Image 1 (tube, rainbow, N blue to C red):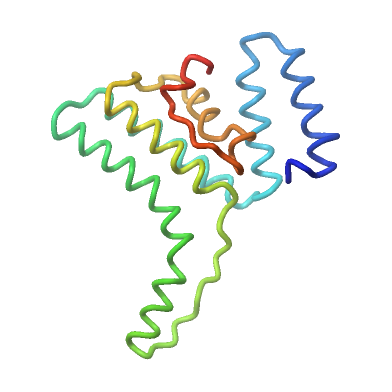
Image 2 (cartoon, rainbow, N blue to C red):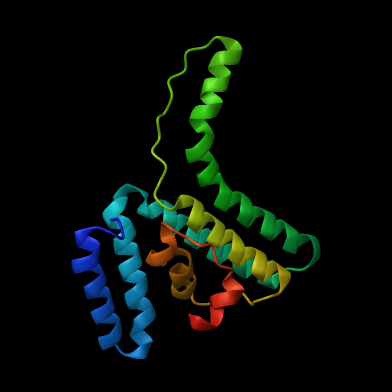
Length: 173
């Protein structure tokens, strides 16, 4: 759904804003999370589970990073970055590597022709930003997975950015 589309401007956005202002304070973040996940599902239903996987892995590795120390802390950060980047690299570079192998070895492997999931770069780097902030000690690990999920999936920045550091908006969540 494009921000300039009739559906977004006259259906989605008014429903989200109305719900946000009518709901009690405790329900606002849940409403925004559900709205953001619906926004993503509307544009890329088959990749919603990919985003949820990035959220879950960031949540778990954030908790592990927060509790660990020394080399284990660095390892937890490295795992979180690798998990987050793996999907992005897979979708962006698989066909490039297949083409390179085909050229180098005169093979004829079929390209996968994968469509790049909407917003994958933004939510990947949001997740990495969160884990780096936890690693640096700028913020404690988020104990509420819904708050972290909202940070990673918030629809206004999901497809257009900017990438914001978790430490900059933690209190707003």
